[in-house]
Length: 106
View 1: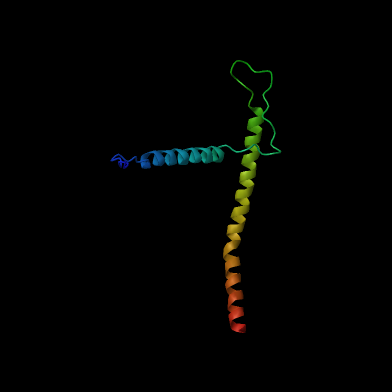
View 2 (view 1 turned 135 degrees about the vertical axis):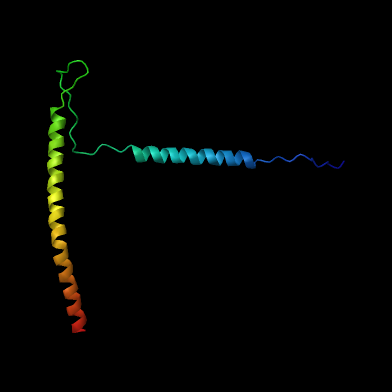
């Protein structure tokens, strides 16, 4: 007996596309989670909360001290940047003069 060919053919393209999209989405989700969360840096102090809290209020003196320290650091860096920017035209002129001297000597 000859075997009759079935006129029904199964198409798995939709299923494989769905699985591929789901896998890609899960990989993207894992990458985003790793990008957003970062491990705690070594050497940073643990935030301290004293036992003398009243209700929902916590003392913020330590945080204010850190903020003031960071502001001072930022101001120091800004001053250094201004000094460097002020010296930039002199340095540029010196470089151009050196380039001219090199071209003349060749």
